Image (cartoon, rainbow, N blue to C red; front, side, top):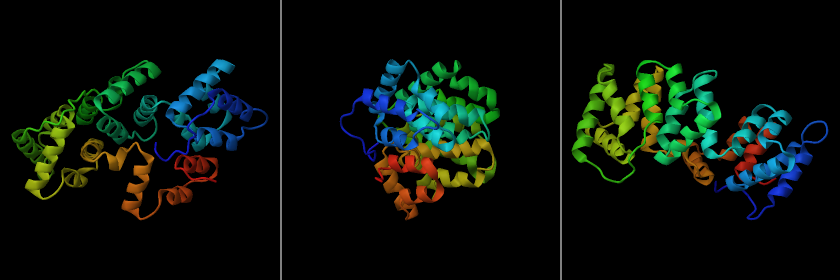
Length: 289
């Protein structure tokens, strides 16, 4: 995360002791928590969590859950998790709580590399004692189930080879499925989207745009009223240009956000958030107090 203002060298033990001190007394010292965890990179955060466990025989995450609350707690909790664990939690929340945000599942499964997605599947299994596929299947039906199970279980080839004839034929299949909202060939579209390499899929999407004068994702905007088409749109959009939707580098996120909205991300966060949650997110964005 390029925007994080993190020292090059830290003492995990000193940070763990400082966090322990922040938990003393009535109410946690949120300013101290932000000063430490808001300015540590992923490797440093894991070192701190390990040091805290060894020093105090207590899981730092569980202690934080008991000391802080609300959006601030959720943000800090997910920030400390390793990336695969964090994605596993996000997928579980998306499919089993509240509004069923299936697009989150489609997005994560579509932007990660094959090895990264495999790591998320392992993390999910270890955390929840079930597979992602099992929980997706239990909470979805029909074509939505087929699409999401296919996406989360995919292990795509990641080479640069492109088959132009295949791109042409599969662009036609996608067109037939979307034409006049007839809803034909959904299973064929799912097969294409869940098995082809991302390089091949981008070639197919480009062929579709060249032949029909509109992108697949824009065409799908007319059919996003149901969960299946929303998830399908998210998957195609994410595969086609993942930097716009799931970029890992905060510096790139900030630049893309400003380019699209003519507003600095820090200013948008300041307007939409408050309290310690706001201070923590701004710290992650590199804003110095």
